[in-house]
Length: 228
Image (cartoon, rainbow, N blue to C red; front, side, top):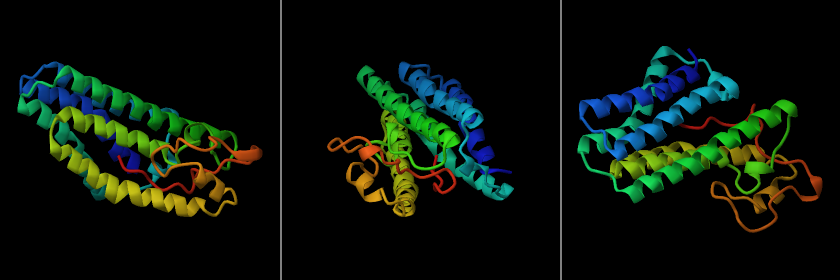
């Protein structure tokens, strides 16, 4: 099996799993419906992305045992809806609005950056520093952070933040550092780092490539895997 099989299965199952929680706990509140909408649609969009502009890093062949282990690990992300729905606490309107806003901006960065990277590298191999990559070197990671921050916010519990923090520190940060180390071989690297942030966009300085220089972001063949 491939890595994508375990990941895509988890993403697609999120909507029915959350709906099953709502039915089991008889919670059809605005907060529960909002959670189903943002996390469920995120999973379906992920599957659509896999079909339209797939990430080749997820084509890696893995054993069935490792695939099960990966699926169980990703299952930790279902703790957030369980805490929200089983707790029976009504989410206030302002909190739902905040979660939806975080999810919206996260979706923009995550899928927009992945699409830009995929289609630009299809047209020409090389480096990218414009568009989503003009101010941050990891707009896709930034998008995922915002998306899962939305889920944790709506859960109204500290445990999802702990789970998110674990993945961000143990998986995201090392992968971003490895990506930086790999990208540093390009002659434009120093100028690119000076005007971008590792994760958060750098809002000062020139936003794009200087003097028409090619743009340095990692190619699809060398980019390290991202966590879900």
